[in-house]
Length: 190
Image 1 (cartoon, rainbow, N blue to C red):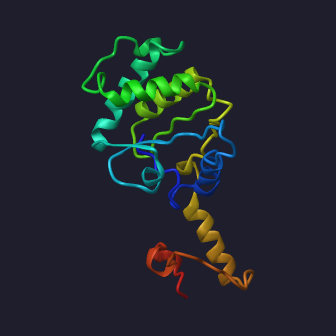
Image 2 (cartoon, rainbow, N blue to C red):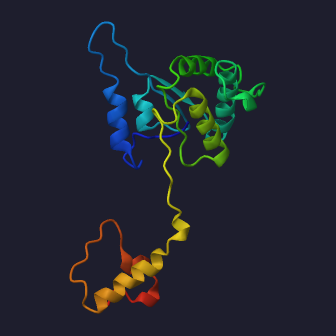
Image 3 (cartoon, rainbow, N blue to C red):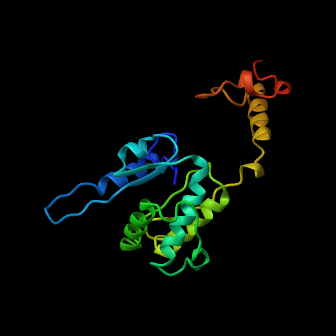
């Protein structure tokens, strides 16, 4: 759901691209390859790789996700909270096709949502993955560190102090300009 997981800006893009593309090699006439569906607001690398791509407004992804969960609730157990839910996407041909394909491949599929979406979208996607039996198989949830709990300014100030004290000889910084971005009171440039 609007998640360009193959883009170089995604934290695990190389691993995900390898996993997805590795399942797209058919080695015999009876072999099957995976299918990639992309629901996105702008064209992306993942969308260019997709077998099926649907362009929606970013503001419509939430409603689409809920309609998908509702459609799946009649096919698999565990999504009763979405049963009977209806919106402008409920009768969309994509909902039926995607719900059928996901239900047929329960436990061996994966649904993702882009980081720009509200927690409710991520919760719905997680509920779908759980109901499909994907969680623990094709989808693993990891705890994300709370960056607001980290005092990066203090850590940076400590490094600057060590540099000024002569405890650090060489510093390599890539893609940043601390002279422009560091707090002025650190006097980084000196």
